[in-house]
Image (tube, rainbow, N blue to C red; front, side):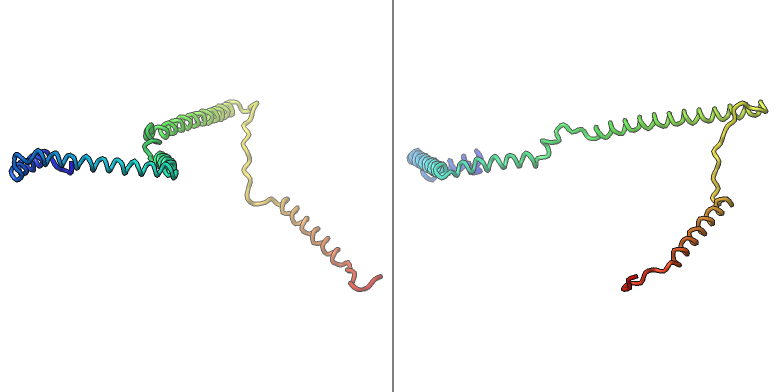
Length: 182
């Protein structure tokens, strides 16, 4: 009450007892109680009148809808409601473990296939050394040279010369002159 503790109230009561006197003290307390009661009644009547006026003007409905909007906004902006069940790193750690497993499987299968090819080449080379006339030969892909062969150069020159010859033949023809009719 008014930020007063029990000690302050006791001091005020002792001072009141000394100043007012023991005969008049109950009358003063009664009058203070009546004043506080009238003040509370007036506040209650004022509050009731304001609520009635708000009901009549529709202000109460507007306030109710405004309060519900505020509650909705609070629920959207309050991050604790959305992330209550969040465990940090749970999903990312699962995904990284899955990726690591898939990567290991891919590396193992590629290594197995490569080892199989190396073993097949080794066996083929060993059989070629032992048997001078092998039944099956290992064919390696030929590496293309970056320099064109003579045949390719000759073919390019031949096609280029025919293109030049055909363009000269078409340019020798006289184009009809504009404005004259024949």
